[in-house]
Length: 150
Image (cartoon, rainbow, N blue to C red; front, side, top):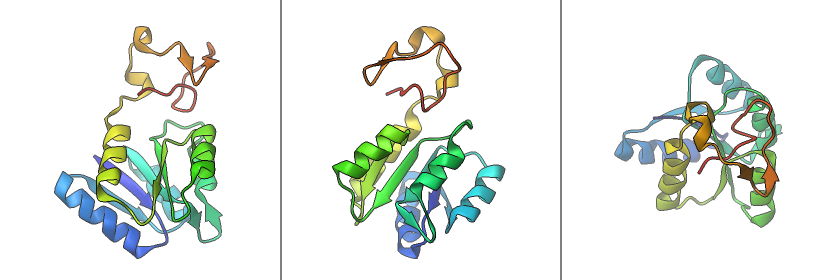
């Protein structure tokens, strides 16, 4: 599986590269929003991991770009990961938040879970959930943002 890591920190790319080696994952690195956009246009990714604050941008810019596209889950990383960021990420359609400094087992667990879930388009209609976060799912086109499959 290929994961796109978007971070201005070389240490973050190094950490995810080391995790990937032992799990037979492939990490592709972008250091800013323009690098992310260029890579996203050319490759398919199982997940996108994005640092909370990018130079001049943040994770919401990455999510805005993904919005409306066939997009992989977005995992946000932050040195100030708290319940407020977590709620905002989930509310806006992200998958999860990873706290920095990283805990290797938590990184493996979160990425393993988000990358192992089938894309909504791969599920038979009979297996789609009828309710998501207490709201009725509409009859319009389904997307990773409108239906969360666990």
